Picture 1 (tube, rainbow, N blue to C red):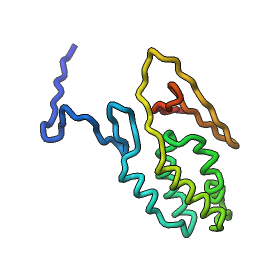
Picture 2: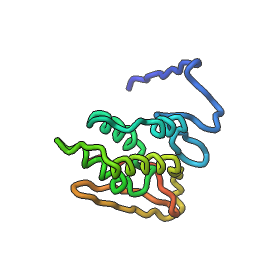
Picture 3: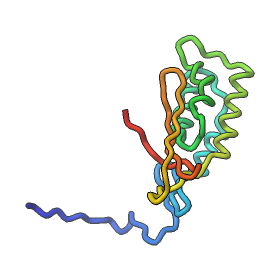
Length: 147
């Protein structure tokens, strides 16, 4: 058996941190939450002028879907506009767009697992997709579902 040594570059290491930033998230003792700069990017996003702009917004927004309860239901009207020939910006679309931004500003902090308590799995389906949130005492936990 060959022994492999691991090395860490001191200039890239931080120790004794109370919270860390990781891929647009802030991870701390209280749980995982969205980094405030990313929330601001979504809030400042201008109304989409075409399907590409809308897909860009929905792509960033959906990255944080696990923080948003009923994400698929909230985003469905805008997702429908990404279908071929369906794009047409209306007052209803603008209302949904503004609502998604508002929801992002009040998104949840995800708890870290406590294995001494019972877990609940909440599922949500819409059309051909399914979403699920793992809950612990009514607080969502960070999780990733692979298909």
